[in-house]
Amino acid sequence: MAPQRRGAPKAPEGSGAAERRRPSSVKSARAPREVWSKWLRAAVLGTCATLAALLLWGSLGGDEVGTEVLAHRGEVLSGRFMEVPCSEDYNSHRRFEGCSPTRCGRGVSDTVITRDEALRIRSIAEKGLALGGSGGGASILDLHSGALSAGKHFVNLYRYFGDKIENIFSEEDFQLYRDVRQKVQLAVARAFGVSASALHLTKPTFFSRINSTAARTAHDEYWHAHVDKATYGSFDYTSLLYLSDYLEDFGGGRFVFMEEGANRTVEPRAGRVSFFTSGSENLHRVEKVRWGTRYAITIAFTCNPDQGIADPAFT
Ligand SMILES: O=C(O)CCC(=O)C(=O)O
Ligand SMILES: [Fe+2]
Image (cartoon, rainbow, N blue to C red; front, side, top):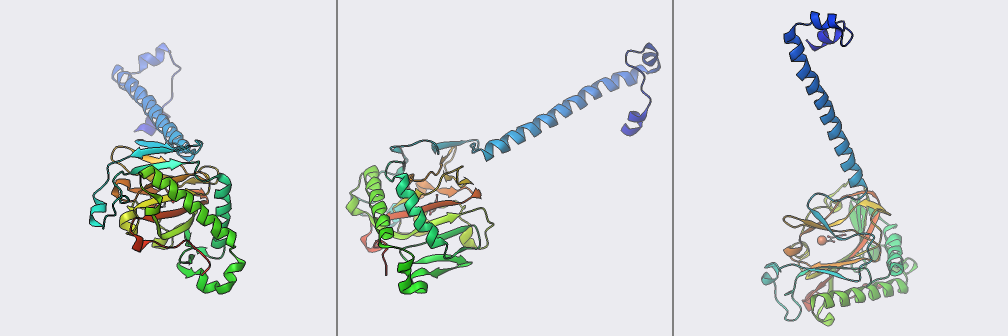
């Protein structure tokens, strides 16, 4: 029906003859139809414009509805802390007085580690990961155990290279890791009101390199929501040191604390330390990296001396 009507000869507008020839029932039916089609066109155009704006906003780093930014990439925070009630998770583990979390929450600081230190430690990650790397989007290098992503699996760097590892990493590299770990440990202890000597580095402690390549194994699926205490067992306090800049080096890849009502994001920047109690009060995920490469280190602490590990060193 519609094509026939469109094909009908059209009389000039305002022509009395045309008005006379058009039966009044057709005239009254066509007017609302024209109004309706104008509205429909406007609605479709409006929807497209809104979608385009949302896509652009997203690609520029805009926030999802119901998401608050705990730390913007452009801010230089000397310390921001947000307290949250502790979960029960710690009760099913041995408690260590003066160390096991009684004050829970999350904090971010850009003044614990300098950008220069972050970039120097990133070069350790770069040279280590250049020796292997996952075929999917997420690679890790664990300087303590020697685990390095390689294709769909892991190799042990220390076993594979033996003494030649000293041609790859230097004593200064390990010293830098120790200095950074020590500074982060002090910041975590201060924020949660515990003694730094009660905290012990625990495993795994690893560099991560994430890009937008599609995942090939479950190890590449870094974006799932998780609780560190459930995932890693020994963790009581998790810290993350970011080694690259959100929206400069990569897009996507923000860290998200997941909460009912409002998620809170941390936008990575080189030298930014984010730390939090490892129980389910801090359920979190990492957004998928859409472009570029994101580097970070996960450094975690336990209150249980039996689960403590030594700093990475030549083995
Ligand atoms: O890299 C990040 O921002 C988070 C990593 C993480 O959640 C983890 O290592 O458990
Ligand atoms: Fe985690």
